Length: 167
Image (tube, rainbow, N blue to C red; front, side, top):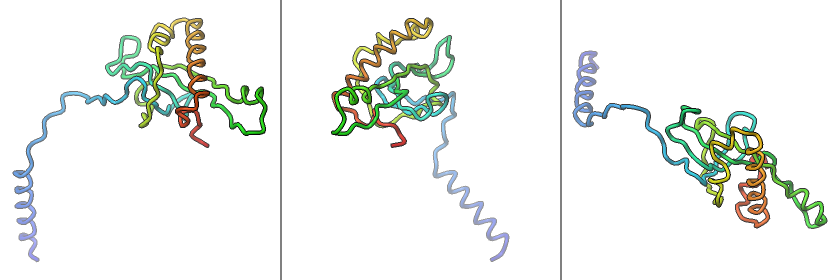
């Protein structure tokens, strides 16, 4: 084939494609995804709790003065309950069924939301932005979260949330 003929074909195809597609609107700013909502289960990707599951308690899509980036307050499981067998006694079952929680403010870039949700009643009042200012408040909030997680685990629902990713 002649070289000029190929170039003319390419130009005509570009012209056809350019007229067939409507022009794209200009992007004025970042487009935020609004699917990270309270109750959504997410996996922590970075930091001390990397690989651990957490539940979003409160989300801040626009950020705030203290944290000027999109972030969420999450409550997660630092230490998962261990496996239980029929042979074990009540004391051993109680000990192996313990859950150690954590609460943290995490950047959206450092969490991966999952398709699962976990309904946590009255956690919005327990864990707020002010909870992180004083260690005693943080300790009280962690104890309350531990009790809620413990009750959820013993009820037998949401089994996926209470198993580690490495099982």
